Image (cartoon, rainbow, N blue to C red; front, side):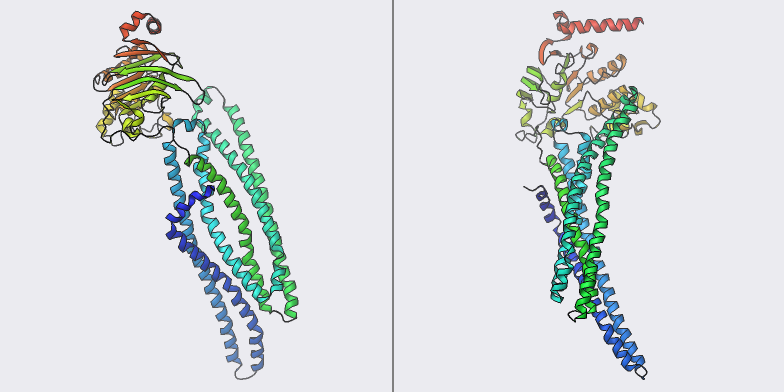
Length: 599
C-alpha cells in the first residue's frame, strides 16, 4: 500500500472543503486564461480604432470618434481588471478551503500520532530515540501537510491552465505553439532533476535534524550530570559536529535551490524570445496578428510556473511519502501489552495479588529477569522485596500494573489474570511510584493531582501530609503553586520522591507500589512516611521495593530476590533467624547506622 493512501480517509472527511476548493481553483485558472484573449482583442482593435480616428480627424465628428475609441479601450481594461479580480478572489477562496482543510488534517494527524504514542508499550521507546519521535511529530507532519495543501492547489491550477492554454494556442497557430513549447521539456526535465536533488538532500537534512534534536534533548535532560562531570566542552564539541553536519546539508540544499532560479528565468526568457521571433514572422505573413503575439507571451508566462510547479509537486510528493513512511512506522505499530476484554466492566479491584510461576526475559538484552517466581499477596497486606541490584525487583513491581507482561506463568489480581482485565481497570486501582522519579514542568499541586485529576485541594494536602511533604510546601513562597521546573529541577531529590509518592497517594489506591521510592529521603523522613502508610494497613495492598531493612521490616512478608529467583521469604524475624542474605544486609546496615551515630 502506498504510504499516502492513509490520507484518503481525511480527504473524504473534509470533502466539504476540498470540493469547493478545487472548484475555486478551476474558476481562478479559467479567469486567468481569459485575460490573454481580452488583451489580444484589445491590441488587435487598436489599428482599427486608429484608422477610424484618422479618417474623421479634422471633422466635427473627431471628438465623438476619439471618445468612442477611448471607451472601447477602457472597456477592455475594465474587463481585464474584473477578470484579474475574479481570478484573485477565487484564488483566495481556494486557499481558504484547501489550505484550511490541510491544517485540519495536520491537527488530526498530530492528535492521532500523540494518541498512538501514548498507547504504545515501553519496548517501542527502547528502539526509538526521543528526538527522532519529536521530529516525526513536528517536521514530518509538516511535510505531509504541504503535500495536502500546496501540492493539490498547484496540481489543479497547473492542469487547468496548461490544458486550456495549449488548446487555445493550438487553435490559434499550431506552428507557433510547437516552437513555443521547445524550452518546456527542458524546463520540466530541469525541474524534475532539481526535485530529485532536493528530495535526496532534504531527506539527508531531515535525518541530520533528528540527530541534532536528539543531541540537544539529551544534553538538556542530563544538564546536571553534564555540569557535574565538567563535560560542557566535550558536549559542545559533539554538538558542534552535529550542528556543522546540519549546516553543510542545509548549504547543499540551498545551492540546488539557488541554481534553480537562473535556469527557470533563462528557459522562460527563451520561450518569450521564440514567441517574438517566430510570431513576428508569422504576423508579417498574415498568419497571426500582433495581438496573438501578446497573447502568446502572456500564455507562456501563465504556463511557466505551472510547468515548474509540477516538479516541485513531485518533490512534495516524494518528501511527503518519505515522511508518511516514518509516521506510519508509529501509526501502524501495535502495543505489545494489550488491554483485556474478558473482565467485567463492573469489576472492582480488592487487592489480592498472586504471581504464579512467572518468568520474564528482557527483550532488549535477553537477560532473564524473573525465573519461575510464585508469590501470594493477600488483599490488605504488605509485601517487601529486597535483593541485589539487577535481581529482578523492579521487573516484579512493573508486572503488577502491566508495564511488563509475563512470558510464562500468570499475574493474578483477585482471581483474574491481569491480561484478561482492561488496562484502565487495573491501573486505576494502582498507585505506582517508579524508581526513576519524573515530575512535569508544572506546579507542585498539579504534579500531585496528576494522580487524580479531579482531586480536591484537601485531598492534595492530605496526600502531601502522608508523603511528609506538607511542611516543605508551606515553606515555599507560593506553596502548592510553586513551579517545580523541568523534571522537578528546583526540588531536592527527597522532595521529588515525596512529590511522586503524594501523586500515588492522592488517588487512594487499592494497591500501592513503591519501587525504591524512599532512597533519597533520610531515615527520619522514611519513618514518618512509613508510619502514615501503616495507618492504612489492612485497607490497601502495599508492595515495597527497597534496599533498606528499616523500610521493610514491618511488612507482612518479605521476599529476597537473587538472579530472578526467590531465595528467601518470611517475616523480618524469620529471615533474621535464617542467617542468609537478608540477615547480612540487616547487620551491615545496623553497623552503618552505629558508625553514623558515633560520628
